[in-house]
Amino acid sequence: MKYRLRTSAAAAALVLAATGLASAAQAEARPGGCPTLKTSDGWYGDNKARIDALIADHCDGEGTRGARDAKGDRGVRGVRGKKPVAVFDWDNTVVKNDVGDATFYWLLRNDRIRPPRAGDWSTTSRYLTPEAATALADACPTGVRTLPTSTDTRCADELLAVYGTGATTGGTTAFAGHDRRRMEPQYAWLAQLLHGWTTRQVESFAAAARAENLAAPQGATQQVGTARVTGWVRYYEQQRDLIGALQRAGFDVRIVSASPEPVVDVWAKGIGVDPSHTLGIRSITDHGRLTSHLEGCGTVRDGEDAMITYIDGKRCWINQEIFGVRGPAAERVQPAARRQVFAAGDSDTDISFLRDATGLRLVLNRNKNELMCRAYENGDGRWIVNPMFIEPKKRKATPYPCATTGYTAGDGTPQPVRRPDGSIVPDQQDTVF
Image (cartoon, rainbow, N blue to C red; front, side, top):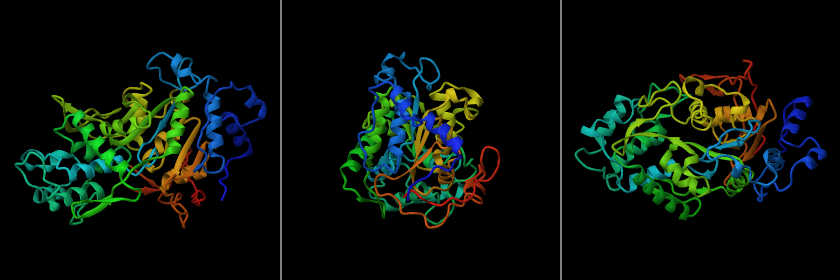
């Protein structure tokens, strides 16, 4: 089924003009030499053409704008001397599967998780429930340098359950009390469980996990504790191609992920993105070693462990670290000249920074409610939806519940998805799969 923009004719015309598709005359007026996507396979409908047009509209015609900018310049087209910014989520957006998961499984299989001091698991996360702390203390030994999770299946299973399902093996809720628009404590817990190691050591762990997961055949599983879990990761060649084209066109390409930053750094190098251009969960260090406390953003101070690169937290970290916005303002939507031109994501965790993009917003369809509600409604014509490039999901049989429960509030309450004016987005059918 062909994907159609749901906009008025006037709005559509404005969008086409903004992305460089308004007329052949406009296309001829653009400078030559701008890069285009080399890979056509996997792109849905006119998505490739629209991305090529966006690149052409922001390219200087020589693919060298970035080389002429002063080192470290950041910004978007329209700000003189600044590069246009493109921001990608990582897991299941640039790669198939999750590099945080891959690293966690490697840690468990190789006895690389250190127990908390005195066996007090509550020190690993301010949101860990007392019941989960007790379950972990009962399952895992104390008085050891690292937990023997390669052989101690009870301990490995408990850690895996808390991280993977947010509940203990007994079914008790493992985390509570967090803002659902700023924090996902399961994701944060991986970074917090890296306490005691140096950044360089964590990078070596991530590199070993990366090598194993890239070498494993597609669809492979691995044994962790008593469970079989995913054992492979692949870079999307389409995203490798896209990131390269954006870089050649002079874009400032950034990665923002809810995996630990040292892990993302290792993986991003494999697609040509320098670690200085990645954002992930950042741990506070003590004498060169990671702690279980996290750096903050906006109104959240370092060590409060209350905001990671997750939903609204991604917006805050992008504004703070890419555009230099400090303090409470980093949590708010910025003027168009201080926002990314292009953004790509696959999940509700990406919704805020995707909405902030001023040019195009690429969504890989993983059937996530709020994201697909907004992408399919496509109120301003800037959303483009694509099936996943590897193992795309089948069509969702029922409509997305946009008008009732598609949005999750900070307190966890399901609510309708609303437009900026407060009106409710109607339920949407799944049409790109």
